[in-house]
Length: 95
Image 1 (cartoon, rainbow, N blue to C red):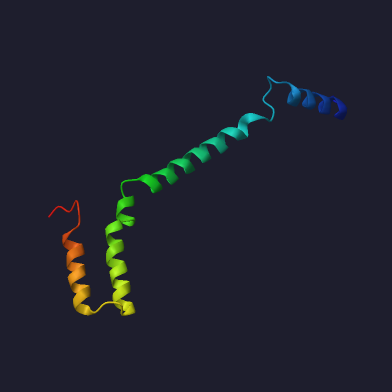
Image 2 (spheres, rainbow, N blue to C red):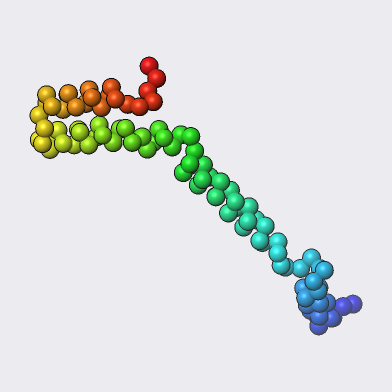
């Protein structure tokens, strides 16, 4: 029969021995993989091909023009003419 002090000493030896299966580096690998997957998702969202659709700089001109029209800075005729210019001058449009 193993006494309590012998069991405690044995477990302390196993935990302190570098070649044992005691606690140690096992937690690092799940943390590494989690950080890696988070990094991949963040980079994909930031630099992915669908980013252009969400952050289209061309739509910024139209929204600014609509804001100016709503604020009364320009009239309806000027709004329509400038909107037509913005929509016809889009670089990279394939019609």
